Amino acid sequence: MITIVYPFKNRELQRIKRSLDSLVNQSNKDFDVVFVDYGSDFEIAASVKELLKQYEFVNYIYSFHNNQPWSRAKAINIGLKFVKTEYVFIADIDIIFNKRFVDVLFELKNKKDNVYFQVGYLDKHESIEIKEFDNYAIASKSIPEGQGLSLFKLDSLLMVGGFDEFFHFWGAEDEDVHLRLQEAGFSSRFYDIEILLLHQWHKTFETFDNNKLSSEPRLSNVFNLNKQKLRFNQNNHIEKPNNENWGKLIAEKEFQLLNSNKESVVLLNKKHVVENFLDIVLPKTNSKIINIIFQEDPYQLTLRYKIKKLLRIKTQEYYSLKQINDMLLKVLVIYYQDYLYNYQISSDLKSIQLKISK
Image (cartoon, rainbow, N blue to C red):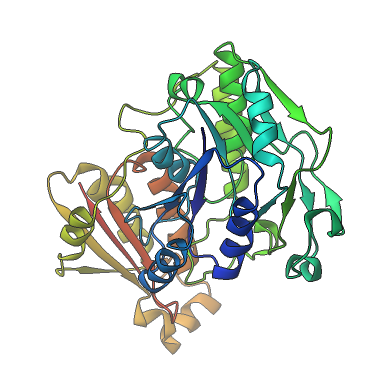
């Protein structure tokens, strides 16, 4: 048997159904699915859980990573802890499988290589069509640098401590794990003999405006940050970047304990206040829950302040909430990735709340 791991968060039901239906039609049924929900909104999670009851081969795992930025690496690692088979395929909720795909996995698993597969990309219109696999019109194909859909021997992933949990949002975690596996003595190869995987269209990370504040947490220049970590691992020959607690699932009890704290402190967006929090309060506070809400100082909107700025008279200095967002998220993903925290931007974009258990 081979296990297929799906990392998931807050995607539409039809996308899930198209992917799993293509697994129902596999000529080889000797597989199971570990479906890791990385903290979807509760209403979405309930709908997903209900849908998945139709698929006997699916094991649904919910981790309470609510109000944390997406980390495909962490979601996959949680899934790896539930894998009991010798081989594991890392999937994507956007994928439609050729009905012979599991058969091909069994043919490849007896070889020593870890294998990553070429993907056929569907355009927006083609993605909503229901067709036989071979009848889909492929708009483009992935290149060898795209290593996201891979067959691994489970022991090889465990040996390098799974995917690097530094990586958040999008980019680099797949290339990184293959490079670290090569560093550990395992080989990887690109399977492009035929297209066995189709990718349903969606907006790409590059199309989002990460330079504007949004209610969905986004970090400016995160792609470059991830690439820097990738190069660091590579240049320093790092095989195991995670600590021993990698793949940790957040239980409901932990989530509820964090959210039971209602005693928040409001901090205004003054530069010295923000810097004091990041440099002193956050790193030096221990054994308690920090609950902070950042808001704009009303003085910033006054005529007096605007006149002083116009006349270049010395006055209070501020960070924008977008700047605070980027500073907080960067610190969280670099230094506090293993901590229990909730990060929320209000729907009106006028406040940012961080709860973190130190």
